[in-house]
Image 1 (cartoon, rainbow, N blue to C red):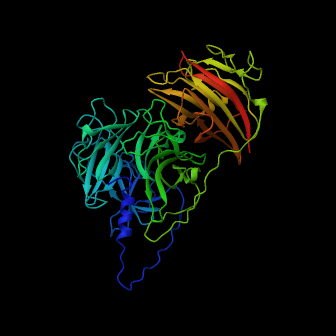
Image 2 (cartoon, rainbow, N blue to C red):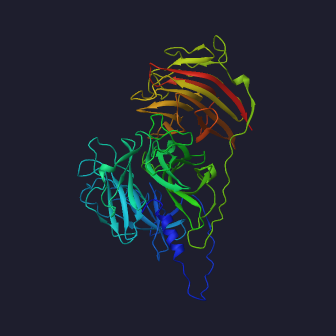
Length: 591
């Protein structure tokens, strides 16, 4: 039983492949190619435009199909009710022989279980096979039994009919915490269920042997609240990897959803990231794994992981097309088509497509059937090659007053000061979200032409623990004007401290967001921040990097932005009463 149940099934299939004496095994056709998004089709041939929170399994022999399950959502933009509303499919199911083209085979829940109201959702399916039956777990955000919960249905077939267990596997919690996003694994012969989301955190419980009941007395917390959802647990080379999605899943073209990893030698944690920070810490850990790269795909996450017949790991995940983010005629309702890309391992850490992120060009398809081998060969992204230092655009803050190259966009509540080789700036009560007032001041200076890396080292005086100092922050900004910028900051978010990489656009079409954010590696009391600018084909790419020591850098997501006469800047804002101290601003060429 488990998210990796597809892998367990593959092993059984390979082990059972016995030929009769003298029989010849025909060589299977090699896998072809695919291009994102995946080709999901309705029976009439129309394209499926959204498959959020995808989950996949291969059928038990002699079944040769793969099966894909999506969260409750519309599938097409044309299928509507008599009143013109989009038709929602309650956990739509698809099947495929090649993992590339998928045919719709029905909804898992044409009628909702009695304990879920007709208006309630059924989200984030998790499909497993326990050796006897298929179990389909799901999140129920609204129930007739007092709040969000986890449910399960069973079937002898991967396409149903599904028989619901009749009540929650994980009951609503008295605090109202979000009991979302089930994930099931088997460890030492016992099934375990992971669940949870931003409000409350992520937890694990033991299940009964039949998988239908969880044991509350076994519950352990896995991750702090206000950071992760969509948990996936993967075992690889003696480690258990937690993989979780962070930030807003559904913010149209400014969606910054991304997946982060941490690992433990126990499936119960503690899970530490590459910098050694726990995902239970208030300065929350997480190593970037699936992040946007500046092509059309943003908001990557709520993924699944499986291994093909050639031994290559892959992920199916949802994303948002920046150029086509919403269902037609439904501005604000984000479409999330399913994407497929390989998972590679670098020094024991998983990355999507060698670290290059989501593909938007033809790719070798997975080895979906026995005997096949994918033509995919990983190429790994390299760290940026930094060229000469650019002192004209840099500052060590060693003087007694700011150099004249710096300018404030407006008078701040308290001015930045120099001392002991650093710039200290009291945090301002305002922010940079016009038309909201007051607007914080930004300290800016000229940016170089061409490709460059700007770096700072910032220390925040906000306490490392405790709630709430929303959203006190300090860090870097590439500033066009008050409504157009990208910023990378160390920020307090409820009871957590995180690094946030945001983009603001103004003006925007009616109903569109002006601000979106993704997050990066962990924040410390002191955090090193970098923004890399590069231009290709007239497109300006801004990529975030974070570090706790200035040596080990984590590459986070990339935003594109068209900024008029952009400036390098510093911000200290989001709430008064604290200080941001900057040791330097250093700018170097990127070769």
